Image (cartoon, rainbow, N blue to C red):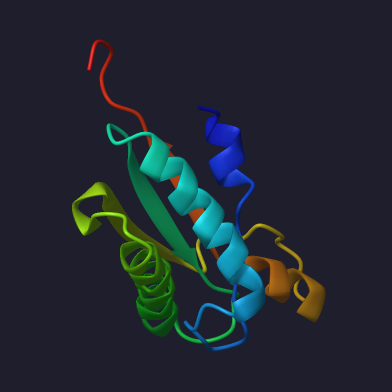
Amino acid sequence: MDAAYFASQTVHFDFDSSVVKMGELDKVHAVGDELKLRANVKLLIDGHCDERGTEEYNRALGERRALAVREVLVGYGISGDRIRTRSWGEDKPADPSHDEIAWKKNRRAEFILLLPPEGQ
């Protein structure tokens, strides 16, 4: 399994939203399909925001985004016990620029594969 594959399935969000858009569901389902094939791996979902809004608000919004993606996966048949979430708020931008193009890239949830220890 390639961790880069999971990293490439970034889910993007509209401004001030934690709703997983229809156009992003295929990415979440593709990740779910991979998880169904490998019951011994877990997933971390990182939620991110653009720089607009307070740090506290963006931290909460990032968490809502990660949880929204988690809920899609749980609804798709993946055990919630296999999925952790965390929020970076605005602290780890994909694009550090200060314009709408950058902000759109930064409103996202990312998948990080958590592999089991060797021998498991």
